[in-house]
Amino acid sequence: MRTTTFTLLLLLALTGLGCAADFGADLEPGALSLPGKADGASDVVFTTAEHVQRLAYRDGEERSDEEAAFVFGELITPDSSLGGPWRYLRPMSALGYYGPLGPYGPLGLLGPTGGNPWNADLYVTGSFAWSDHSEELTANGGPLSADGPLGRAGPLNPARWNDVGSLEDGFVPHLRPGGVFAPLGPVGVSGALGPLGPLGPVGAHGYERRDGGEYWPEDDAGCHDAPEGFEAPPCRRVEVEWEAGGERRTYELVELYDEAYAAQMEDNDTSFMVIGESEVGEQDEYAFASESAQWVTVVLLPETARYPFAQAMSVLGASASEGYRAPSSAFVPHMVTGFPVLNSYDHATAFDDFDLEVDVVVGGRVLGTIVSQSADVVDWVHVKVPAGAQLRARVRLYSEWTARFSDAAWGLAFRPADPSYRMIVVGSTEAGQGPNTFSGPYLRAFQ
Image (cartoon, rainbow, N blue to C red; front, side, top):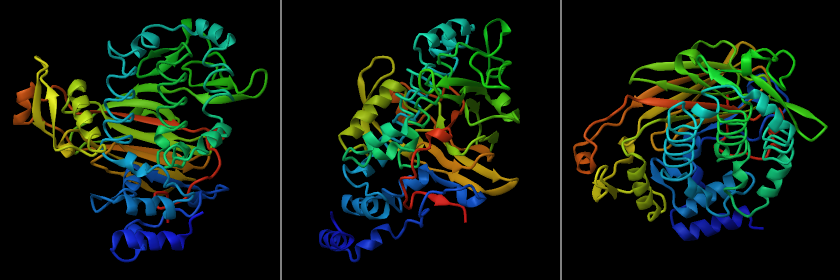
């Protein structure tokens, strides 16, 4: 096992830059440990896209591998330097606009949700209810049964995270709640509890999406497998067997709300998705509450970008050859002819830059505001809150992309749509928190 002293001497020899401890001098102190018993501010720990980016960047410049290894190996507990996970923090990688959380991924406009003719949810829950058939599926081992992803054998069982975490790779263990890459993990927005899982708009509950996004059962019947107090529509929660014939757990359905409906809700929970539009200087606000102590993940992604999917994948291919750093130029296919055209690439202006703020209120007192204002990657907040915490998320458009003169060469003459966004909120549930595993400068606490 390497010691801190050995690491410092080794890094000093490799860099010749002075004391290796300076590698992390720009990182603000994080939470020394995750909280235990709920006691207000001390029970709230959080991280954001910005805080995580600082692990790999200093003053906008990428840290060297030696410096990043020091940060992940000495400033984060447990040691997370194996496999070089900081490479996944580059703008074109896992947490960036081209990754699973971005507009080109499964949560974006081209994915299965959105209510558009090309989205699967229009046909799964957007046209009619089939909740009677859903009950049959569940009785025969379907997605809402103990054999599905919400049961003991699924990804929400922390015992399975321990198995995954034994791999000698700093990236994989950090998919757990509280980790650097938690939004991508089992309790993240693309997991079993999110809009792509059995609780969401393409889920197995069989309810029809009506009005601003509420779920209604077949023929206005009662909500099946609903806990006490939630049997009548609109349907908001379901009970699922954790193990066959044994424990049952309650899960919140993931609604797809429109902007106006979500903004006026006074009883929203930590399991929903909203699609909205914005202008520079405009602010949209959404309130929701956490019934249980849990990790809550809020991801804010733009719906559109300068490059359509085919052109974007060409840019991503160019970045792959550069270690997923943003390229200065890339060959992209013409939108009509498909002939490759060399185009300069400016990552900072290729996307609508939406900023995210989340107020945390406990016991009627505002403990603080969590801010994520990254220009390079998708903005998100990952926060552990006590039971009864109230949250207010604010969305602001900082800047919008435009069609440049040079883009006409590959077929983009003007911007075809106004800026729009998707905000996704997912709670881990109290049972899905897992053990208090991580500490480091990316985790913060209100002072």
